[in-house]
Image (cartoon, rainbow, N blue to C red; front, side):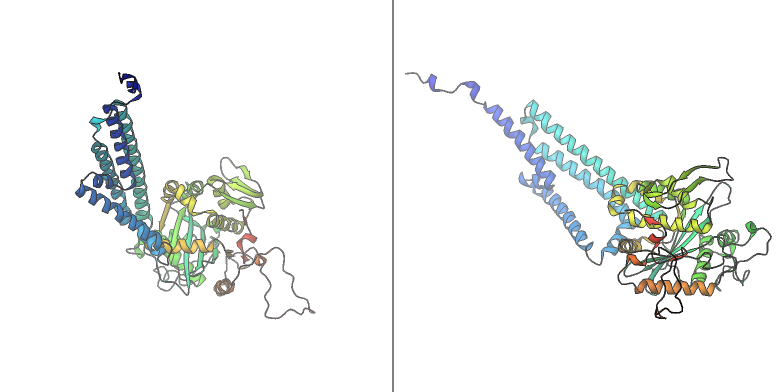
Length: 498
């Protein structure tokens, strides 16, 4: 009897060559997969112990470092970790370490592909495994290049801008930051600060009070240790007929620049002189300062995707004295989205309003930036924000303190932002009462610190009625402030949407 009929057909059975090629393909894919998950594990599996151990130990060390850093970010050491990361030296190391590690991973991937003995693969198997290896290598290289570029950008940003020099010591439980908004327009010589605001921040809670001074304030006092005190012992004042020639607060910057020989070794004499005058005026010691060109401000607003405000009064775009005149308007409304261009005009527009109203709008924009900027926005749009940040003229905030300030900003976002604008009727800019200014500052800070639970009722909404002769109100009870130059909650003056 023949047994040929019982044998399976040749079409139903793979030849030994096909089985060998299938095994080789699976081996290739498995080894590359092991390299993706744990670099070096493929080499350990096939007996290349030396290379495998080095790669696996390197990988495990990196994982352990990331875990430790993640845990530290959840502890009180978070601010220190952020400061360490922001150090240009750290970022430069990361800039070069990432591509080196990526190159090592690519070489391990290529080695794992070769360990599968591609000579035993079919033509189709060679194509599949080879194409996969190339795609993984290109993906890794692209990601590494992008990360390295981001680290380089950050190193440049932090190195150029956050050079340090400020006072890290907390001042009576607070950190005071001077914000100067400068405008280097075509009709001006140099950069002149038109917006001068001090953000006084509680070092524990982050609750903030903004103190704004008008640019046209006269008799600004120089501290006794200022090189300009001898020239203006009674404050910065000039006897002139034309107000445009008067010695105004925002002219202190230009005065110091013109007399920079009096400030040997000082990189920014204009800021140094302005800071001294504002410290003397408010009775506060300034920890840090930052001066921002308005062009940089516009770019920064665009980088974060704009801001949203509830606008109560239309604001003109353009100037009555410019070639185009007033050519457009920012219309009132709720939840109005402003891009950089419109936010800039909202903050700087002077037509049909006073300097004091403009100060309120500027603080409204600052409040919106604080409340609407979130970590997700920073991460997803970092390159644009970094590019905009390069427009900042200068700051003396050191990278080591960035974590502390970011933590305080995050705490302050959930609390009302107090505000005082030293404008009429609170003061007379041509002849200010400096004792009153310092008293208001001290009282406002004390009130802010005493507010344990922020209440919406602190917002001003109408005129305060003086008590009648028959009033039974206690003498110690102070009426709520309703002046737009002094308000417990900035939202009561200019509402931030969202």
